[in-house]
Amino acid sequence: MSSPSSSTVGMPRQALQQEQIGQTAIVLLDDGGIESLSMRRLGSRLGITAAALHWHVRSRHDLLLLAADTVWGQIPLPRLEDLEWRPALLAMADNLRSMLSRHPWLLTAMTLQPLDGPCRDRHDEHLIAFCETSGLTRQDAEQAAHSIVAFALGAALATAPGRYVSFGLQSILDGVEAGLAAHR
Image 1 (cartoon, helix red, strand yellow):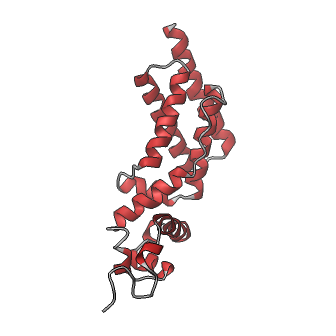
Image 2 (cartoon, one colour; image 1 turned 45 degrees about the horizontal axis):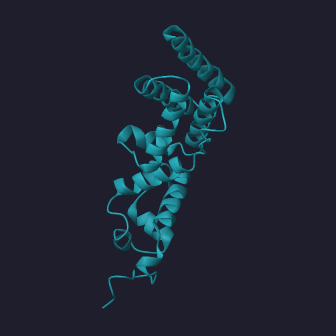
């Protein structure tokens, strides 16, 4: 009888890391879209059985959460001290659009179920913090950040070239700046 700490293929359960599972899931998703992700396929890529994979990830939904949070964590976040708020927001929106263009399965997955995790939360809080450095209240900063994310999602969905995205985001930020001037 085999011990519960090893898979049927011989890979010790402890040797398999969440990062390895997430990265391999991303490769599967990037290659074949959301339909290609299954515990059996992922287990096969990792050299273990689907049953052994369940020791690490309870469900396909948890696997999608792990993959989504991993790609959110790959988005570079500018330091608050390094940039003015406008260039920082433009850079963050373009980084988000670029990530979604590299991983189009995430757009589909996000329409099917909420996929919020620590890296997504960190990204959104960072975006809100930059919006607040413009002088917006917390509530207005949250609304501005939501608008920027929605625009970046739409731009990725439409596969819009970067120059069109930049123009649209500049227009959104012009509106934010006009609102700030009106409240002063």
